Image (cartoon, rainbow, N blue to C red):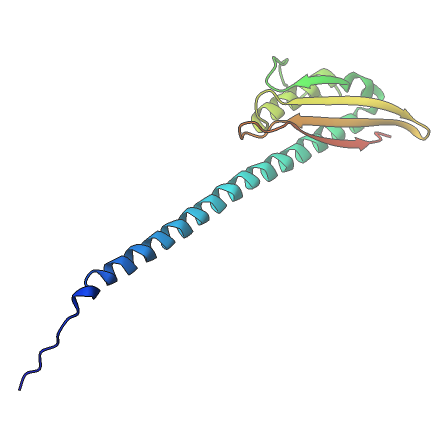
Length: 154
């Protein structure tokens, strides 16, 4: 004896609706994950720029320490991407050459239009130098960010 199961006509298509709702929820979740990934990439690039700024600032501070007798020659506002003199790595203790090499290094690391400023400040315990780097992150409408380092060359 065969039993016939009677299907309720009101339930037809209900499973398809459940699948569509599940797909909608899944799509919203995937969009959220993509947004988080995008933010992580932006923050990662910002951290990369800050690391490169620290490295380049340390480089120029070391060069000023090595040539402390001529430390005042390093002062000034240095715009990244502006024309620089020739960089000859075989020349030692030459402020103009050190700055040319440093500007070339900055141009490869920082976005165009960034600025670097080296200023001396006379303090009670001697002359202190301040290296300030200003850069604008690559996202649209971002405000320029400033990072400063202070040191004494003696």
